[in-house]
Length: 577
Image (cartoon, rainbow, N blue to C red; front, side, top):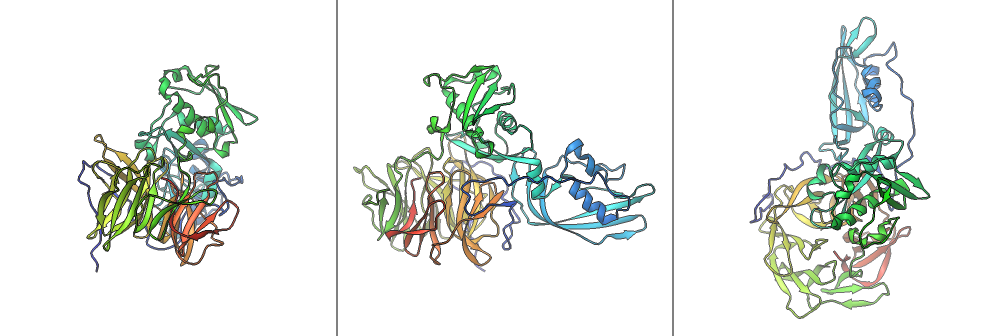
């Protein structure tokens, strides 16, 4: 048996990391709570279909009926799950406050009856869970079994003698009882806004519920890498009102404690949160105790839109928005007019990336049977800098708000993730909690707080933390799309989604995942050749323009169209970043 590869610990101060996620299935179907259509540029919530629940167990209910009814009734949270509690024996306690489990395909076994007692087993598929903070968690294992004990009471018949802690709901029940919201918080290391998906209890005034959730501050998995510009203690004085696409939000006086230099971030995170498509809001009016919130230097602006605050947009257009690619071992750029331009002086290039400022190029270059990472200034004047040489190096990826490039380098069976500035020493990235295996692709999110990695052909997402000394750490990696294997290409699709090229049910395909794993959907493949896709990239436009490298050529797809070839040969297609 081949010796497994391991991830090297970098020679930097390490932050204690949580244990790696375990129990990831090695085969089987993709288990996702919700699939979305291939054509949808954004996640669109399905229509909610209301249903009427039985008010309690029928008089002649058998043990299987009681278990089935209890599971169904858990979807009604009213009165501390009053309907579900009617299926319990009078003296049975049930803790419904534990994390919520999302399940599907329940299979209720034949009751095993012995006198006035019975046992019923239920097998089901785990689709995920919600934490107490409303954060979705992908399942660590996809199958589950529960055993229910029942007893027969003289006056009412069969009732549950015990109940597992926590609530179980189906995906449909989840959409009936909760609204999925996206909250925005500035990155802890930059001004760029970071989206956080949460589930909030269904409310008659969704905008008010979203604002109150935003006022609670960062939560869950992404909390260590974001902050809030809204002062603690700030309250919503009245429900927001929406008139012709403009929402008015009235905050308490505490919001005036925000320093002037953070008012832009404060307004931006409120505007981005309230202009998500599901809320049908185009602009935001901010008030403090009924008076307009004025930002120094911005004049008497009353209605704020996302376009008014581009400096906080993680998907803002980069300084150089050309498409970059490799042709005959050299780096090139293709502009919107179809003009092709040679970049820099490097040869033997296999992949490369240009930073968002358009100042530097980082390339993986063939080096006598090995691979070298070389950084070159696009302004010229300095010689290219050879940073490292290894057996294998992943395509480079730049940090959003700095001039540091990341790669995963493999030598002698050891994988090391490194962060490389154009000048100065190379710094290792503590990645000890990544699963063991070959790291063949590594991509930083546009907001800079997440890393997506392909490890032994499977997809993981980790959080990017910084220690007190500034060292970079990959923390709490989570698996996405356990049924997709053999991944050959990876890219962030906007800030909150990841797209991959891989194998599902023995068929090569393109798939898109929310970064929290809640939704998944196919991408259109019509027009692509049958050859494996070796590179994927998405532009900063909305909806994005995607480019794939396959069969020695590049293929472009705009929203609503099939893939079409780009003139000429080219590989390793990428946009800046």
